[in-house]
Length: 279
Image 1 (cartoon, rainbow, N blue to C red):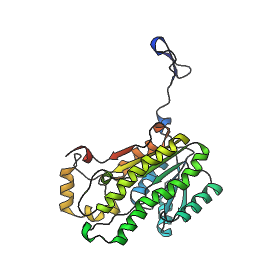
Image 2: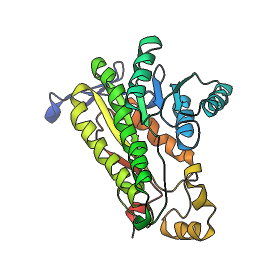
Image 3: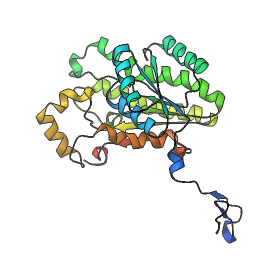
Image 4: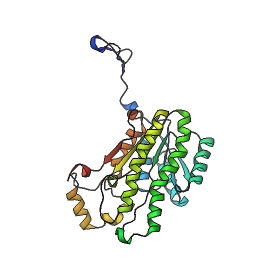
């Protein structure tokens, strides 16, 4: 290989004749400047942390939730940090409402380049006592929302020939624990829906992947964080020996949102302190 300093490329030689490698500036691979990112369920917890994280890489963020007051507080907090913020209030489980909100934003503000499907819920009850109404609510919140928002946004991305979709899965995409069987089922579905989305949409220039968080200190896990017995178990079970901090998901989200992951598709990235790697 012959390095051509003036062009930033390798010139093929010898056995590599016909190979062309472009060398990019490493920082630019993760630059999200000029992009708009929609994060569902982003008024608090993981979604809010991911909104801040993508904004730090240059993206304008579109925060979403059903509680308008909470959404307004989150927007003001982000604006205080100098972030370009848009608010898009809709119920991710309502297919028609999602389509109307996404189509309206695309028509009046501009393209949604990145989507993070983060909206979700948990409900802990022994399976034999699990309320079927709650089972249906889990399916709608954790699975139907991914389909609804993913489809609405992808239809626009397909027309542009590019786009990034990240679905928030879980260690429960791979593992189960007592008392959360329906949640485990929904997160398994998110993992496979991610693969299906990638299979259908990669040919249109989209990259669809998932981030599977381990146990993070979030409002969704507040009861577990407050449980000393569970925390002691978790610290022993997790090779890293601790709960995760939501900021530790930002790097994975930026990577999967950026040009750096241009040939990564249908992948589930576990960010879990090693819990899925060990017995």
